[in-house]
Length: 363
Image (cartoon, rainbow, N blue to C red; front, side):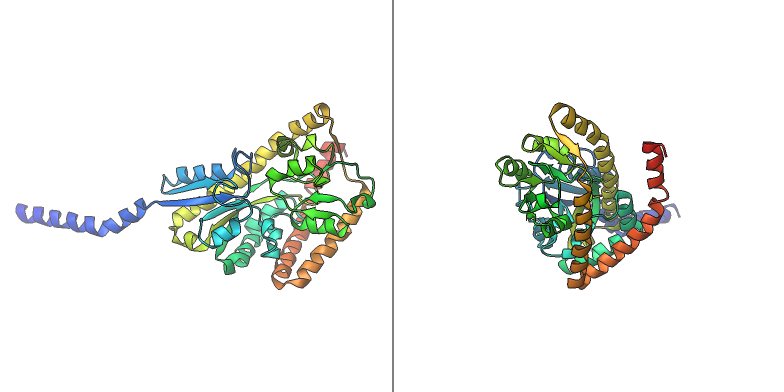
């Protein structure tokens, strides 16, 4: 009986090893991916620092125990700055970090997943994406291109931008050459602005040499790092054009489908963590940067004149309506965005607006 029992246990152990082998092998399988980026090496927020794409790559590797490793390439290190969409769609790389509005020439509706002029703030955008159907629409929009996307960062509200000359009225915009991307660029063009789309690293030399007369980038900390205050001194607030700004994590759909469910969950969790952390970092550094720009570097920071804001609002309405009428996919995204924005505004008007009035104005 003893010999028989030993033989049985040995046979069972061997069978268990064989039956369990595929599970062990699957658990130990590793993936080596590459991520490109629309922004230059060393860029805070967009490349490095808390909540940045390189931070995302570190988080994924740590959370996966090294099973998914992502090598990051800044703009120009593997592909040019604004070619990430084609690189990921073509399977050249698995991931890209950028902003969806850079792909407006390919998919007009993609712009709604970065920022909408006079649209929702960051709280509203996150609510729409995560719990209002926005992320599902984003995925459906990219599906024909073999892509999937997730939010991976947010700057919060941005500044209108830097101008070499002051703005007193709408006529001052006519003929102005300005770097500004996305839907806001289309709105500005309706007011006579000659819009330019330039990567971040090209903004300062263009502004300094007078190739452009004005430029929008992000906010005080990021703008100061580019040295934009050395090329223009008039810094306008009122972030009408980008009340939020989403960093896009773009993923090749076939590569995504090849990941086991737990690694997909890790990617999503890391992206969401960076979305929150990058916003917190932006909120933490902008106040001191703006104070320095105004007090120590001769910058005049002020809101846009009300006349200009009113005209921009009218042009935004017309621009969005025309875009929605021209493309069924844009219409679907536009209608969903605006419906959620109206619902969110009804709550934010009671909650956030009242709180800010009390906290800042004492009434």
